[in-house]
Length: 105
Image 1: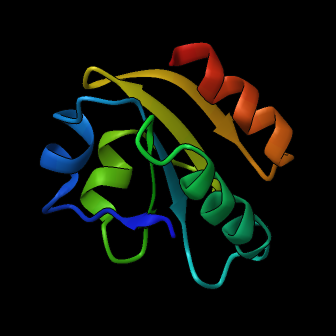
Image 2: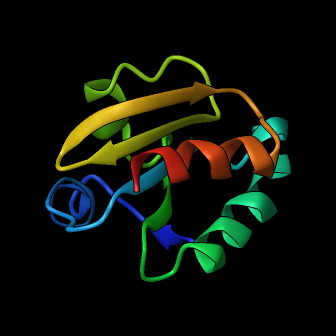
Protein backbone atom coordinates (compact mmCIF):
# COMPACT_ATOMS: atom_id res chain seq x y z
CA UNK A 1 0.00 0.00 0.00
CA UNK A 2 1.30 3.43 -0.92
CA UNK A 3 2.20 5.83 1.88
CA UNK A 4 0.15 8.98 2.47
CA UNK A 5 2.24 12.14 2.28
CA UNK A 6 0.97 15.51 3.53
CA UNK A 7 2.23 19.08 3.80
CA UNK A 8 3.13 18.35 7.43
CA UNK A 9 5.05 15.06 6.94
CA UNK A 10 6.62 15.74 3.51
CA UNK A 11 9.89 17.08 4.91
CA UNK A 12 10.47 14.07 7.20
CA UNK A 13 9.03 11.29 5.02
CA UNK A 14 10.28 12.44 1.61
CA UNK A 15 13.05 15.03 1.78
CA UNK A 16 14.89 13.37 4.70
CA UNK A 17 14.35 9.80 3.46
CA UNK A 18 17.38 7.49 3.33
CA UNK A 19 15.94 5.82 0.23
CA UNK A 20 14.64 7.29 -3.05
CA UNK A 21 10.97 8.31 -3.00
CA UNK A 22 8.30 8.22 -5.71
CA UNK A 23 5.65 10.84 -4.95
CA UNK A 24 2.33 10.74 -6.80
CA UNK A 25 0.57 14.13 -6.79
CA UNK A 26 -3.12 13.31 -7.32
CA UNK A 27 -6.74 14.32 -6.64
CA UNK A 28 -9.75 12.11 -5.95
CA UNK A 29 -11.73 13.61 -8.87
CA UNK A 30 -8.95 13.01 -11.45
CA UNK A 31 -9.66 10.09 -13.82
CA UNK A 32 -6.03 9.43 -14.86
CA UNK A 33 -5.05 9.61 -11.17
CA UNK A 34 -7.57 6.88 -10.35
CA UNK A 35 -6.11 4.78 -13.19
CA UNK A 36 -2.64 5.15 -11.64
CA UNK A 37 -3.73 4.26 -8.07
CA UNK A 38 -3.38 0.45 -8.43
CA UNK A 39 -0.03 0.89 -10.22
CA UNK A 40 1.28 3.09 -7.38
CA UNK A 41 0.15 0.48 -4.81
CA UNK A 42 1.88 -2.31 -6.77
CA UNK A 43 5.11 -0.29 -6.96
CA UNK A 44 4.94 0.30 -3.20
CA UNK A 45 4.95 -3.49 -2.70
CA UNK A 46 7.60 -4.11 -5.38
CA UNK A 47 10.06 -1.61 -3.91
CA UNK A 48 9.41 -2.14 -0.21
CA UNK A 49 12.71 -1.68 1.61
CA UNK A 50 14.43 -0.21 -1.49
CA UNK A 51 12.37 2.92 -2.16
CA UNK A 52 9.38 4.70 -0.65
CA UNK A 53 6.27 5.05 -2.78
CA UNK A 54 3.48 7.38 -1.74
CA UNK A 55 0.76 9.79 -2.74
CA UNK A 56 -0.11 13.36 -1.87
CA UNK A 57 -3.57 14.81 -2.47
CA UNK A 58 -3.13 18.23 -4.13
CA UNK A 59 -6.55 19.46 -2.96
CA UNK A 60 -5.65 18.88 0.70
CA UNK A 61 -1.91 19.66 0.47
CA UNK A 62 -1.66 22.67 -1.80
CA UNK A 63 1.50 24.07 -0.22
CA UNK A 64 3.63 21.12 -1.29
CA UNK A 65 2.04 20.94 -4.75
CA UNK A 66 2.69 24.65 -5.20
CA UNK A 67 6.29 24.38 -3.96
CA UNK A 68 7.04 21.79 -6.65
CA UNK A 69 5.14 23.63 -9.39
CA UNK A 70 2.60 20.87 -9.94
CA UNK A 71 0.25 22.18 -12.64
CA UNK A 72 -1.14 18.92 -14.06
CA UNK A 73 -2.07 15.72 -12.31
CA UNK A 74 -1.03 13.04 -12.01
CA UNK A 75 2.51 14.34 -11.59
CA UNK A 76 5.05 11.86 -10.28
CA UNK A 77 8.31 13.06 -8.80
CA UNK A 78 11.31 10.89 -8.01
CA UNK A 79 13.20 12.41 -5.11
CA UNK A 80 16.61 11.25 -3.93
CA UNK A 81 18.62 12.88 -1.14
CA UNK A 82 15.98 15.62 -0.88
CA UNK A 83 16.25 16.63 -4.55
CA UNK A 84 13.94 16.01 -7.51
CA UNK A 85 15.85 13.76 -9.91
CA UNK A 86 13.02 12.86 -12.31
CA UNK A 87 9.49 14.00 -13.14
CA UNK A 88 6.70 12.29 -15.03
CA UNK A 89 3.43 14.04 -15.92
CA UNK A 90 0.37 12.01 -16.83
CA UNK A 91 -0.61 8.37 -16.57
CA UNK A 92 2.19 6.01 -17.64
CA UNK A 93 2.62 2.22 -17.66
CA UNK A 94 4.01 0.48 -14.57
CA UNK A 95 7.01 -0.78 -16.54
CA UNK A 96 8.05 2.80 -17.38
CA UNK A 97 7.83 3.85 -13.74
CA UNK A 98 9.82 0.77 -12.66
CA UNK A 99 12.58 1.67 -15.12
CA UNK A 100 12.74 5.23 -13.80
CA UNK A 101 12.91 3.99 -10.18
CA UNK A 102 15.60 1.41 -11.04
CA UNK A 103 17.67 4.17 -12.66
CA UNK A 104 18.04 6.01 -9.34
CA UNK A 105 18.43 3.10 -6.93
